[in-house]
Length: 156
Image (cartoon, rainbow, N blue to C red; front, top):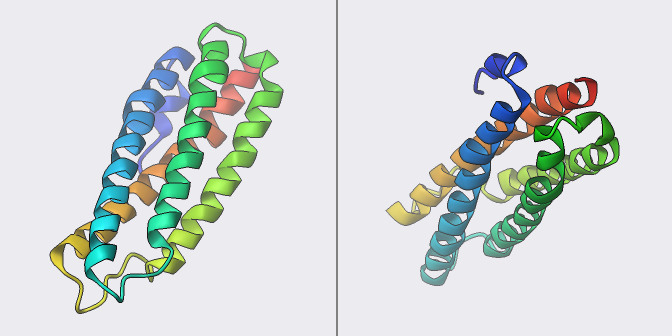
């Protein structure tokens, strides 16, 4: 868990820029790399969890769509001082955050809490380590938006 207290007092535009640079750009790289690595491992190991490649690809598609909505609609409103008028988009984003959390729970279950089996190759082990990093980052990202950015945007 990252200390997010700095963002309680940072300007809203700076907070949005941080989300874009630290989380949106990072998630895009993480998920593209994970999808590619998962496909490679799945092709080489019969015991690789069925459905994991599809789950990663689904998370990538959903999160990409979500981030695009924030980048094109919600974040410009917040950066332009119109956050008070963003109640509906913020509610939609928070509902989607719940869906992302459910997908993370499914990812956790499918990967046995990101624990590769004893016979896992180094690529499989790396994939699970990368997925854990992604999950931790996404949880921090959601917490920052839900508990700091969105409430502040609605009240400033």
